[in-house]
Length: 369
Image (cartoon, rainbow, N blue to C red):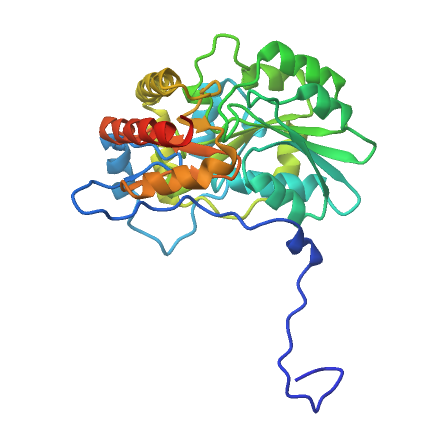
């Protein structure tokens, strides 16, 4: 019934926030198409293609017995192991349902309709979503031509309304890492009251010698918070476990915004067991990084302009040809991520990468000759 006209039979529409019209929804990577005679490969979601550690699977089974009870809301055992591994205090850690929840919580504790948020673009698609939901004005600072953060432009974009800056290293989807010296210089220009979030979802794959080391930085800058996840290098994307490292005052604020009991008992147990096999996780990350380097080098040998690749994917800045390249992959039972400005290709099995190289070679001959 229409409240203004009780006799009207026209259906009413719920009033949703106008801010929802200012940004697109998050769209996950597409699954591959079934093609007769071809094994399908999903290279669209930056998932870890290696089989889970058997000890982690055993831990999941052992803790999948009693769903009637809530998990440990404080995730004490997991946080204690993280604190030991990272060399930080328990009051400097919070565990959440993936790093995505951290992004939501960060905007909730910093942003509203009176504030501004700054982040690089293109970067992770959730940045405009979470800041937009908070009602904050969004300042998207274009990346440089080589897919890197333009930190000078980001520093110049800071105003009295700025309350949150998001950085991503390695940057998703383009791949380059921030350098330690350049980030320190940038942080020195950021007012102390502005919270800076450094999204390090892919830090384990980075190999550049001068790459930023967030744990060292967070000790020196009280307005810096690190966002990390078990989804990528640990291969636990389906269990949704992330964590933040920051000074106690920031953690205290985040604890008021995160979902209570969000990380299940099974997820906590799997993440804890994975941490106990830290060296194996890093060895597997190094294996993926080596495959990434070889794949990026092969694409460059074909003539492609591939930016520095430091995560578990490579980026092809195809522009208006992105959709055509995605279609060419779909026809060969491979799903890649078309993000408009380019295509992101996750590192997968050797067979998958070899097929993409064949597709890329044909595509280049057809569209760039």
